[in-house]
Image (cartoon, rainbow, N blue to C red):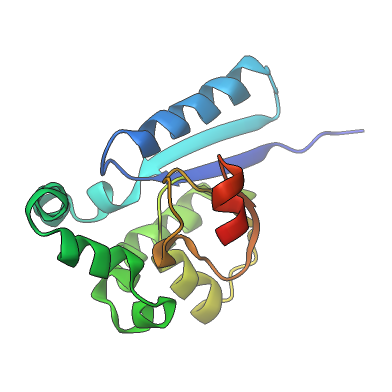
Length: 162
């Protein structure tokens, strides 16, 4: 019996260190398991897709939390249906499509809120399982990905709200 090689594509983001730390922990754990037929690829989608704009957004993110808390809350915790009107929903779409064509993953694992995945699953009819590891303390609309087959959360409180 021939075992097929499997590939996991981890989509992460360098907004804060938590997403990257969780990603690295997952990669390390999978590598420590010595699974010969599994390869794990990780990509910082937004930084790769739009490095200059993402750098600017990261500065805005840090300052919005410090100085413009209401703007921060509005962006992350407004009603989920507001995401449909948000530019952020399409951020990194072309890069993600190209990654899927190039890497041909068997599983997409999100460790960063990635609304563009919703666009991909709804409008492009991809047939790749998606799982989400929520690396934030609180659930917000950007974590919800239609067709995600599984959500992993760190706390019982987060699980109750998801």
